[in-house]
Image: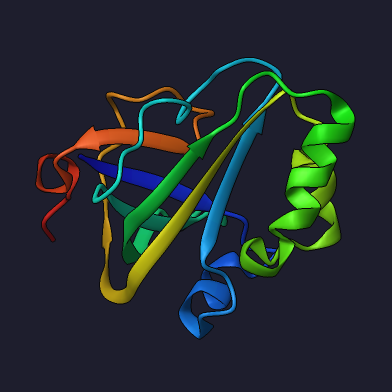
Length: 143
């Protein structure tokens, strides 16, 4: 399964993946929302920055996935702090995810930069930062 994942531009998430400092992606919510329970080992993640250019610029393979049970605020903060060396979150992102009831931690491997390309998002809602596209070729826009 291919997934398109939006990364925080201001937090330099893509740069941190490129440099190898960041090896884990996090998502969190008060309820079980995407990608909770929907990402598996060996899925491929394609990365776009949330700065409006809509270009996929990198990809990686999912090595491991952790879907939390319902967490207390304290447990959630503890998990984020425990994996901060792999998550490499700035203060803003740390605040955004620490304290959420459900966390998804995705360890990645084999990050590669790609020749940037656009995707067709018309089948997906506006606000999602995680798009399970099944096959990237189906949404890739050929120039």
